[in-house]
Length: 272
Picture (cartoon, rainbow, N blue to C red):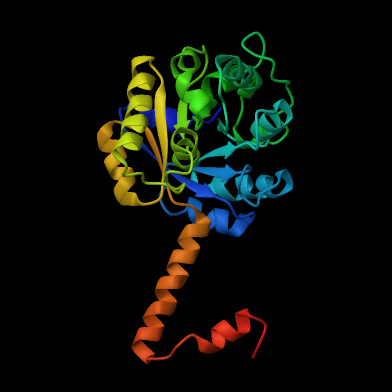
């Protein structure tokens, strides 16, 4: 079968640049996949994406050669197995808080005797190529999200889970979990205690022989995270990139023409 590009980069000692898709559209997925990312993740947890939307997105990304992953909605065998059957080469699972949950996650990603994944890779048999049944267990990536106080406390037990490839830090939820409402949730944390927490997860992951991934809002922060040692960094997503580019374009036009947004504001409020 086609090799997992993420694993090949890791084997060469290189970090992975991951894109993120929250809009259920095959054309926008195709555009993002052609921009030079190493991997791209479809977000079925917080993104506006259901299964019927994710499948054509996976199809649209195939021509680019980018490695596709899916963040599933929850620790649910049906969602995980269907994402893999659709052609995902990796699963990011939110809210993994204990080793028992991590073990369940791993079992849903691997076929017997290594797990309980049911065999029926309807699309993956074609998209991943021949040999899927024998090689999929070694090519699929399984990442548990660390984003709660409970997960942080149980980190070493989670990392000791056989078959777990690594952990993925969700900084917004991790900040809420560790600091409550002291700080607003968001990416690119600069608070010393949050940087310490992020680096603690990184160090413990590497000590356990696992990979560490971090969600970022900007390329600058992601590059800094790579300098700390992160193996995979996600930079922004399609929603933020679209909004940011549109905002920059509109702002530039307003500056050059000296116009204001009064009519646009009126339209937004239902008036003309």
